[in-house]
Structure formats: C-alpha cells, structure tokens
Image 1 (cartoon, rainbow, N blue to C red):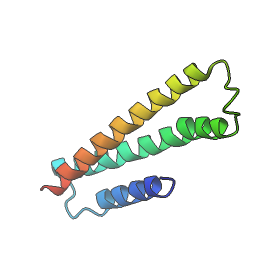
Image 2: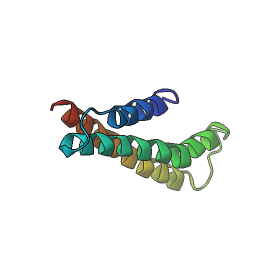
Image 3: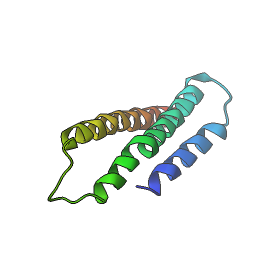
Image 4: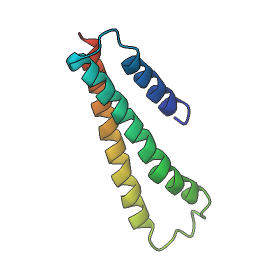
Length: 98
C-alpha cells in the first residue's frame, strides 16, 4: 500500500493531464478521479499512518485508556478514505468508457 497509493495518484493524474481531448465530461471525470485519489492519499498520510505508527509502538497487553476513541478516529478516516477511493475508481471507469 505505501507504494501503490502514490503510484495510483501518479497514474491517474497523468491519465488526466495527457488526455487527447481538452474538455467534456470525460476530462472532468478524469481530474475528479485524480482528485479523489489525491485526497485519499493525503488523509492516509495525515491521519491513518500516524495512528498506525503509534499503535505499533504500544504494548498490546496494556492498551491506552482512550483506545476506543483512537479506534473510532482511525475508522472514521478509514471510511472517508475508502469512499474516496471507491468514488475515484468509479469516475475512472466512467472516463474510460468514452
């Protein structure tokens, strides 16, 4: 995942930038798809990765008292990220169908 998320952003953005057509719904969906992938990657880097790193350093036998809140925060950003990636994929498929 640390490799494929940035690669998906690069590929989707280059797919939008190097479009033969310079307008229309196809180009809009390409850039929207790239935007979804970019925002999902930024959310991952800013919110999910720090929580993952903090959890790796903790003792599993002695969890912090606020572990449920930490899990809820991680799940919240994970769900946003998942929806963004799904919508981005659908938009990408839509743009290819033209």
